[in-house]
Length: 298
Ligand code: FPP
Ligand code: MG
Image (tube, rainbow, N blue to C red):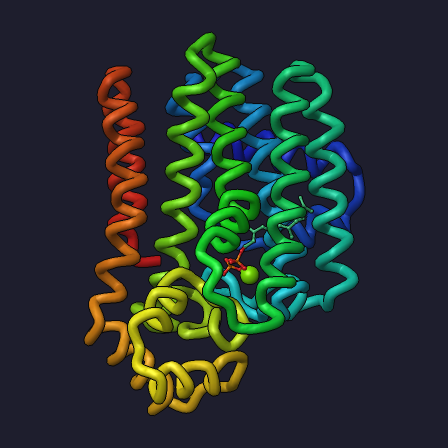
């Protein structure tokens, strides 16, 4: 039923009756539609479920349009980002249109769902702000990292699962915990893949987070275990355009000290908890989504 969600988004875009918007939307690379999949698996495929899934995917697309401007990222999902193709102004405005139209439609679903989703978008925006401010300098503050990824990524997945549970008359809290764990683990894996995968597999430049200033969990853990000379060296590479040998040195240190495994384990624990919760509820397909998420390579 994902195709029904795609049709609904296209219909919402067509409602705007603006050729430029239709053309720009067609240039957006489709994502994994993870949030829509979650919603459909939890709540079935009634019209309000399809609408909610479409609205949340539009909000997510808007947030990535803005994020690529903020991160000065020119590639997404193996294709040029919209800011690379048409510049920052166009990317920001298309984000605004998707976001505003999404909210307009959200009002007709239900007040409770509307509040849940808009609350998550506030968190999303605060999380992005925190991501930018944490990127100003190297840091070792794991709690701030965890809070930031909760806000930036997990909050919308938590709200997606919670909204779907409300639509289906299921226990909101259980599904929100599932969505939150999935979102936290998703971002942790994203941050790991930046280090372990190549640009072709990722569809965006590899080893880019550290250059952007982001001290993700593996870098926090690595710094903690390095001796003073190596810790100094790591600090000197922060926010730098890394040479191939410098990238290799970081990867070697990560492997030597078991950092990849340690970070992966942390994400896996969240997924195991999510799987257990869904198994208890007889939601085998939601358990499968969680397992597949942690095994992904892009
Ligand atoms: C990607 O993180 C960014 C997000 C998941 C959230 C972005 C949120 C905003 C820009 C707030 C504004 C929201 C709206 C609805 C307009 P990342 O940069 O770590 O991941 P990436 O490598 O995929 O870019
Ligand atoms: Mg980004």
